[in-house]
Structure formats: structure tokens, C-alpha cells
Image (cartoon, rainbow, N blue to C red; front, side):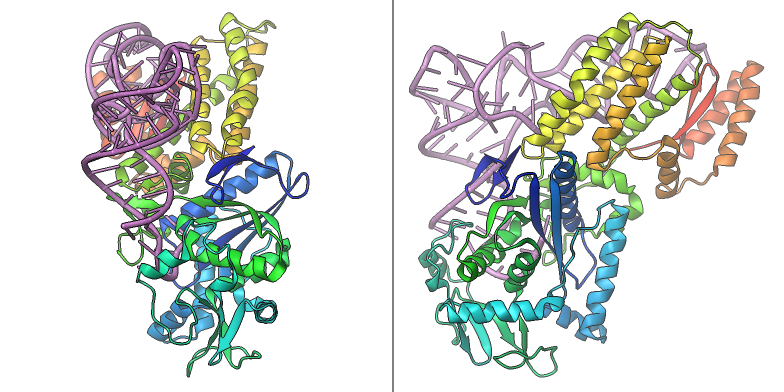
Length: 486
RNA sequence: GGCGGCGUACCCAAGUGGCUAAGGGAGAGGUCUGCAAAACCUUUAUGCAGCGGUUCGAAUCCGCUCGCCGCCUCCA
């Protein structure tokens, strides 16, 4: 497998610290508000990575944290007039609600900053002892000058950064780039006792403390959004390697942003959509598919049009699954041999999964290409079904193809439902003003008209349904319905 | 200003040295159908922002130019 490593700027062969085992830490969220679609991207990308490692036979330990104490949480609490920890609890719950809907699995360990205060204090002390940190007026700062490699991840030169001005002036810092490991608490703020008085942890130190505790001093993969690269991950390296004297992380992995009108989606610009807002209008699988249909490092432009295209793609998939179901219900002609078309398709199928899907995923988790291969197989499968296969072997072949598709879908956590479930969900999302019973009633009426060759009435009924978002498909042995997409 | 990235058809998007430049959406024509829908077939980039260069050979490497974006402050 190859993974792009931000640290080296290259795609590298993945070689874990210990064989067949991969330890991953992904930066989660600060729980002070609802998650937006950018959080969803990050969560889904790492969810797929961990699933794929698992599929490849690795023993995976996946850690994803919650930052549950921070300035933004305190501010939010003041604004809402509730305790800070109630804010953290509330938005942690909401995080799970959103992520569950998107099919993002739980991490193996989901540590919280406030549950690791003891570990954090111990590391800060160690950093002071080793001369990498200093106390000033009840706070503790990391001394960037003490760590010569500072800037190696974000490829920055400390002198240039200082010249770059936009750094807040703080008299207590020895170097403007120094950052807080421990912050003295102000009146009325939450605090924990420490050797330096009452205070709370700085932002970066929690990830050092929690990753070390749950994954060890050195581990394989550390990930997060590209905006965490600096200063967060740079600071984590400085803290962790200074404290342990060992390399911190082997592969740094960063996902790209979601943009709106080409601009990064962000809270401060106000150009963001929360996950729940999007899920009011689109099925969760559509969102997941959309986010995986571009490579994880590239930016994704977010728009309704693109979401609709994703919806159409998924619909194409489930339409094919319906065809398979229809086909399997039919009796075979009892013949053993594979048809001519079956032989061709069989050859394609045997090379599909190993040859294509895995190859795509092995290459830096190229889900976009992997999905492309899925649709190649879908087309070939449809073509085979068009050839009217009928033997026992043909039928087995179709079922084998369906299994392959399901296996690929499982890794991406897509295509896991039945067509009926898909359409039921679409009916909700699109607020179709008809029940299934009503639809069946209309189909029955139309069927009667068709038997009497009353094409006008039949077409009127079909048009009525279509206006309400239901499309009909006449087949030899009945009429199927589906929800119009796009 | 420093660092990094991007620019592939009407739209989205893979491909980063060598077969006919994946896949999805949209459009056009066709097969099928009572008509549709779905599916399939054909079709829409002799060319991958532009200009030079390296090479037997480049969308893919190098240089320059243009355009867009990100990070350098909290941020997935």
C-alpha cells in the first residue's frame, strides 16, 4: 500500500512499526457547535482508511479524540448560559447523531481531553525538566527555540514566521512562536489544580498526551484536516518528540477542504452547511458517496448540483440491483453451461476486485478511482443481463458479481441497503406526497387501463405519478416504480 | 512576502513517462418499448491553462507566464 505522507511530501510504501498492525490517531472535533460538512469529510475519510486496513488484514487501533475543554466551549457556555461541560456533552451527543447517520463507525478509543489532565500535567512537567518549556505567571509555554526541528512538517522557517507579523504579542513568551501548554485560568473559568496553580491544558498538548497513552510514543498514522497541519500538528511533533526523544509519527495524512464558490468552508466566513442541514435534503449515503467520489487530498466544491449527481449515481447502482433481483427470481432453463456473454463477463469479473478495486485503494486510498471501477462492473453486469442469460451457471455468475459489488461497497460503507430501503429513504428526503400503498393502487389502475389498451388513461396516470416524483418502469411481468432523482 | 497545492470534455472527476486519456452527470442519435422509463450501443478532449525545454516518447519531468485556492491567527 502507498500513502501520501505530508512530512516527506511524497507517496510512500506503507510499512507499519509492527507487522500487520496499524495504529492511527485522527484529530476529532472541538465540541462547541454542530458539525459541518467539512467535519463529515474528515470523519468519513479516516473511517474508510481504517476499514480498508482492517480489510487488508491489519490489526487496527484507531483513536479519535474529542476536545472537550477550550476557549470556544467556554465562550459558548457563557452565551448559552449553561455550564461549559454541558456544552461539551451536548455537542458530543450531536456529533454522534450526525456521524451515526453518515455511517461513520466509532473509533476503538475516543478519548477526551478532560479525562487526561493527569497525563497532560505529567508531560508538561517533563518538558519543563528537559528544558523545552518554561513557566510564566501561572502558565506554561513551549520553547520553540529548544526544538531545532520545529517547522519540519509545515516546512516553515521560524525566522520567516516571526517576520510574517500576524502573531499575537505576548510579553510572557520568550519567543512569539512559543505556544501554551498550560493556561492559567481567569476568574470564573473552569480549572484543574496543577503545580503551576489553577489552569487548563493548552490545545495541542492533549493530542500528545492522549496519543501517547493509547498508541504509544511512536505510532503509524496521524491525520486530520489540512488546516491542522500548522500550528496544531507541528506543535504536537515538537511536544511529543521533545518529551519522548523518539520519532512521533511515521505517516502524516491530511484531508483537503470543502469549498463553496471555491472558497474554503469555514465558520468565520459563515459559508458552511451543518451535516444535519444537508441531511434534511439528501440521503446520508448520497453525502457519503459525494465525499468519497473525489480523492481525499483534493478540495471538493460543495453544491446541490454535485450532490444531485451523486444521487443519480447511487440510483444507477440500486437500479441495477433491482434488475439482479428480478433476474434471480426467474426460473433458469436448467442448462448447466455458461452462455457466451457469460464467459466474457466471467472473465471481467474475476479480474475486477483484486485487479482494480484493491489496486485503487492501495494507491493512497483512491476512492474516486475505486468507485469508477465499481461502475465499470455495473455497466458490464447490465450488459450481461441485457443478453438475457438463462442457465444455472449464468445465474450463479450474476450472484457472484453482486457479492463482489457488495464486498467493495462494504469497505466504503456504501451500497449496503436494498433498493426498497433506498427508495423509502428518497421518499422521505424528497417529501413525496404519496404512500407506497397509494403508488401500488395507481399502478394497479394503470395496469387495468393497459390491459384494455386504454393508452390515454395509462399515460395520464403515469404522468400524474411522475409529477409527484415517481417514475414507472413497465416490465414483462409487472410495473416497477422508483423515486425520481436529481 | 514565505511555504504548499490546483488548472483534464458542457459539468464533476481518475490518470503523474509509453496500449484506443477511467468513471458519473448532461446533450445528440440508435436498439428495446403501445408510448415511456431503465439498460445497452454510438457520439461529445488528435488533446489535458499557455509558451518553451528534457526525452525515442509527456497531461504526467523541468523552466517561465497566466488564472484560481490554501496555510502562515481559531478552524476538519
